[in-house]
Image (tube, rainbow, N blue to C red; front, top):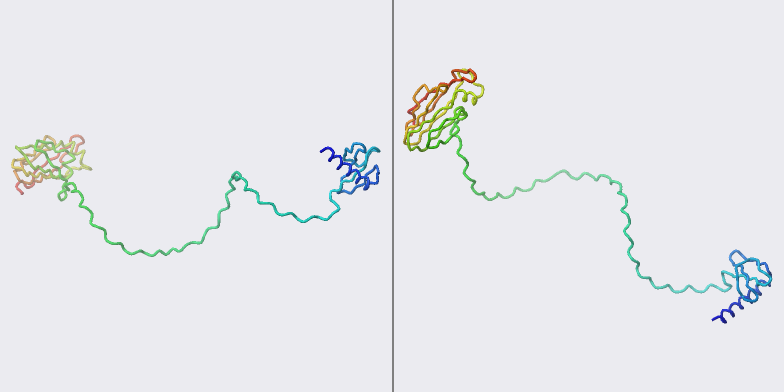
Length: 246
């Protein structure tokens, strides 16, 4: 290997001698490289001025021969790995508003009649005419002021003995009545559907001016009127209108 390198070196030196005519100063073009080679060892160095112990050499970057033909295209290399995902780009500008679509909408055909739904549950018992219905248990009871002034129908369905229904006080009735004046009135009905007598009883401020008896299977309407409207000491007077009406 060393011998071959030495032979190539001597060849270069010989060429250098023939092209530079053994001048110490090397004149080269801008495309060439000037160098100096040791006459004894053949060691070269890049320089434009050589020593007396060196040969001047010009290394041309382009040879003197013609350019050879273009070589064959090499094989396609393998696909490289997928690169990292780039950063999300900025949001683009809002596009122009589209044209307004048609506004005419055709009405579709009427659908077929649906099946009849199930019958709903029976509703609560409604009022009879203008009266609110209150069912009474088989026992003595106090008819509250709110019930008395609300045009109530007291429905006594069954009794096992004579029962007494007592009216609330005049003061409580006045509280339940809105805007009472002297002579203001209200009414209520007792419907006795049992086989025993039901008796309406008054008190010192809810005075009953007539009999309060409601015979078996009878309906009796009572009318009451404010006769004293002193706050806290109101008095109402009541009487039956038709005790024998069925």
